[in-house]
Structure formats: structure tokens, C-alpha cells
Image (cartoon, rainbow, N blue to C red; front, side, top):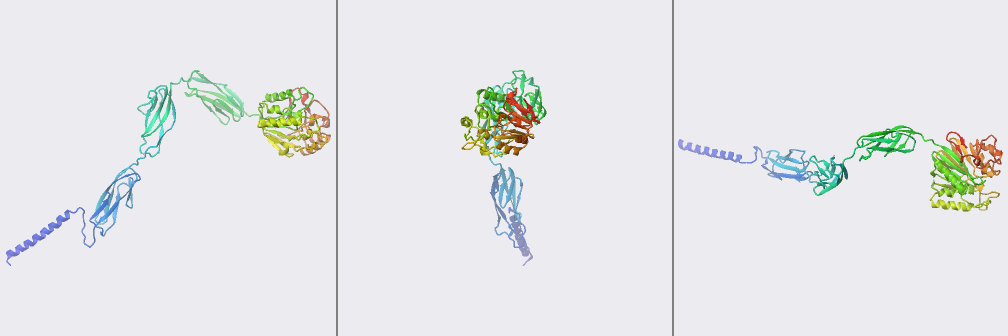
Length: 562
């Protein structure tokens, strides 16, 4: 081979190598993904399939993303996911979840060749409609020229569009200004309409003409003195008298001493307080209140009876801490009934907590029906069951039936002593403790041998402030009184049994055993039973009294008012 031919062959081989090299270079430049050198037998990633590449979600919505490597037999199968803004979305186990409105991306990258795809994600707010508009007020009052902000809330609170439009039905009465405030235009009525889409609500509006302002007020009286529990009404005088807004606000400087409600002052506890009245435009006046402790009187009133007859009778008013009750009700005559009623009214009795009847004779039970049917409320009636086997000629059964009938008509409860109490048992009446004696029936179906209903008398031992008062009814049984006197011992005040007659169940032994400090006789001055007692014991007689009653005041010690 000559040199010329050899050089040609070399040139041809070199050209072939050059062309092949250029082919390889051009082929590498046309690939979309960058493929790294593969000096081993690894199968490298050549691409990524991602679906979808664009996602739109509502807050809380989810979307699955499908990702696969090309080729399927690639050696490296790990894929990296990178969320652009984790406040907008989350991505877990191939699922995208919307968290809050906004836009972001998910970057998907292969492990070896770093081939990358981008998923664009947009999250929008949920469309939660308003279901109800709730105005803070259902009605509004305005004066002409006044303004009012309309306040409301919507349901549900997380509604997408909470905007509410405001308008009025009659703009000549009220309208909204450019600041969104409701303005009173002229006197009249209209409605504010609140609207969100198809949901609406309304507020009724009343517009009034401007007030005539109060220039001053005067309260009368200026000073008040009250007992605990009492009430006093305060009068307000307005200047000018034709002022339009007279809604006064009342306050007390010390509610523990006195409260006030619409001008009514109530005394609560001892002390002083200032009551202030304030007008809507700030004008004030005051009243000084002094509260004193209510005296808790405890008294027994032995009411004078038998106005037109020589007979003796019992009508005893019991008073404790402002409450009243009675033991027996006096004679049955019209004059006596009216006398007892008038006495109770003059004392201030509006209701009787109870009436207790000692026994069913006219001179003790005669006024019962009259009081039951009067305007004095009787809350309870206490009496023994009446058997009617009385050796004394009387109208007992007739009276008893009349009382029971009157009680039924007035729906007044009855407590039967013989079915409720045993001797020495009783009840509390405010500051007073009542113990009842001779509670069981002395009478029987055959009558009481040698006696009558007098010996069936219920007797009361009243204890108040350490003092003992013994009310004996008309019992003249020595045996009954002997047992009771041994049980109760010395007393401070005693009503003489059976109006002081000789048949009074008292001998000197029983009198000494009871040894009262004071004696009350519901009769004229008679000495038959009195002679059994110590002559030094002060004794008071109802029919001899110049007053309408003998009052035993037990509030502080013992004081006899005759």
C-alpha cells in the first residue's frame, strides 16, 4: 500500500469516529431530563408520571395524587415530596388536604436522577351560607335626630359571607346615614330590614319627638324614719311638670339598711341610708332614711266582754312579734261580737294565725263564727272534738256544727286537739312556746259524771322571754288541776279558772303550788276563788277595768296595763 492510500484510510476512519461522536452529543442534548452517567448496571429513572398536576380544593377538602416512576423497574424508587406552604395544605400518604385559602405547590422529585414535577394547588374558602340573622334588639325607640348603631349576629358564626345589608321600610321616619347609623327622621313607626341573600330579619322602630328636659326634681318627704320591714312611698315632683321623660332611676347608698324600688323604700336593718333619684338628664334629689329595729312586742290581751249582761266570758288576743292569734272568742251576742271585732281592728289585726277554743260553751266559743266570716283572715282553727254529752243545758252541739260548717265554707284547716296532741306537747307561735294540757276527752259517750263541758277545757301554758302564763279555761275539776299543777309548778301570770267562781278547781294547796305573781279574772270582782291565793298577789278583773282590755305586756319582763 502506498502512502497516499494509507492516509486516505486514516482520514475515513477519523471521519467516522467524528460523526459518531457528534451523534452521541446531539442525542444527549435532546433529552428532557438530565440523565447522569451510569457506570454500573443500575436502571436509572428516565421520567415521572404525576396526576393531577393542578388541584383546586375547599378548606377541609381532600384530593389523592398519583405518582409513578419511569421505567417501572427503575433501581431507585424513592420519591421526595416538598410542600411549598404547609399553612395552606397538608400532604400525607398521597393525599392533599386544604387547610386555609391560598395557593402553593407540591414539588415531586426522584431519588437518583432528581427528575422533578410540580403540582399547583389552590385552596378556596368553603361556601357556608347564613341561615339566620339575630338582631341584638327586637325593638328600638329613638328621638328625632338621635342615632343608633344596629348590632346583630349571624348563624352560623363561620358563615362564608357574613355581610348584612341594612335598610328601613319608611325612610321618612328613620333612615341610615353614610356612616351606617340609624337616624330618627320624624315621629312615627317603621322597620329596619336586615338581609343576607334570602335570609332576613326585622327590628321595629319607634321615633318620638324630642323630650322636654327636666330642670329639677323634688322628693318628699326629705327625711324618713322606718321600722325594720316597713315600707314608705316617696313622691316625686318634676319641674317643669310637662317634662316628657320622667323615668327616674332610684339608688340606695346602703342596700343592707334600705332598698328602693320605683320610689318605694323598704327598711332592711337598723342604720341610715341615702336614697337618690336621678333623671335621664342627670338631675337628682335625695331622701335620708333612718331605720330602727322593730320592737318585737309580746302581749296577751284579756278583752273586756259581756257588754250588756252580767255573765262572764273569755276572749283572749295573743300577740307575738307582730303576729296575732286568739284563745276563745267571747260571748255570742251581737254587741259582744262587734266589740271583740272592733278591738282587734284597732290593734291592727288583719289576720289570725290561729283561733284555739278551750271548750264548747257560749261564753268561750260565741264569737267564733262571726270572726270566721269577717274580713279578718283566720289561718287555722284548733278545737277538741265535741261529743255533746254535756250535763249542762247548752246549745253546744248547734254552736259546734255552725263553726265546722263556717270553717268548711272558708276552707280553713282544723286541728283537733284530742287527735293531735298529748299533755305537755304543743307548738311555737313566734316568740311564744305553747304547751297544751287536758288534751284528751274528759267527756265520754255517757257524759261526765258530776260535771260538764267545762272540765273538758284545753289549758295552755305559754312561755315567752322566760315568763310562764297559765290559761286555765273553765276547768273546775280538782283532780285534773291537781295533776297539771304538779307538772308545771310556779307560774308568773295565771288566768283564774272558771272566771273566779267558787267552782274553780283551786284549793290552797294547788294555789300555793302554782303561786302566780299576777292573777287575771275574766269577771267582775268576786272573791270565791281568789281567797285561796295569797292576798298579796296583784289581781285584775276584766269587767272592773275602765279600759277595753287588760294587757299583759311580756316584751321586757311583765307589765300589766289596766
